Length: 439
Image (cartoon, rainbow, N blue to C red; front, side, top):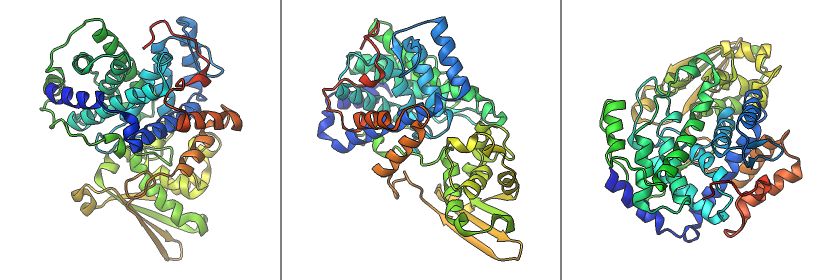
């Protein structure tokens, strides 16, 4: 696996990002979308408290717009926590997780000495490494990916930004692989928000592994393979050493919920626009088995449970016509009609979709008079069959920045992410000084 990793890193090292404009554009879009999610997530009380307490305990040079000074490690934790708080950040179906969040969170606090072009190149390196390991290191049932392989991509991103060569970057990845944590899915079922610290842990581990490799610390070249054998109980799947850009397969989320929820939610949106919801007798959601395994939470009492609830996503979209952070706030979250609708949803496995490993949903709405409406969805915005649009990206960004930035400030940040020249400073709008250990 290490030889394959070095081969991929050597290919990426020689890459001129501007020679592949579609890759550069996707990276810029992912940066913008993730920062929009950060803006929304930082408004959560627990994230704001963590940011304030981290600054008080260990003040640092990195400063979010309007926030206290943070160390690089605490800034990485805040960035990652906030990005995933509303479950609206990017993902990658092949990796079964999100390679970009940890890489971005690890890289951004150490980026003041980089140009924006150099930042984007390091981000792409981290994404490509993370996505490949996500496909190779398939976690056990009961584990959660966020605290696991994303740290390998984070290590690669920071190591590349530090100017290390392919073999040293691979060493940073293997240093992280020696200590990948066991992160549990359990908090998702219980509704506890400790799950939202997992990607921050990955980002911090990636930072430390890269700095260790730059300092001459070494690791066995077989560490990732050994982790799969010992930690996962099986050998890794083949590591993709091709020159296919996995970042091109990254998806954006139009809704603030895990991706499995999107298909039923879109079906509900299409069905519920012109019906009397009080006349609905029952709802049947047919969907592939993996969605029910991971998102079968019923009667969710916390936002995290609801973000992983197929029935809540259907009900919220029927009731409100939207599924964004606003839905998880009171009084919307406990709205009586929403809760009645959620209780009327029954979940059924579609055997054909499950066998073909195809994502999709079929929602049937049965009314009290016996009439029936049905809607089938096999793609949602952000899938390859239904690409996310610049307008959708911009609209989402402004909604998620509402309450954190003025419209003019949000427009400047978005324009910088999407259009700043490669030689520009990466994130001058944060107004942070040179950090102590710059890239």
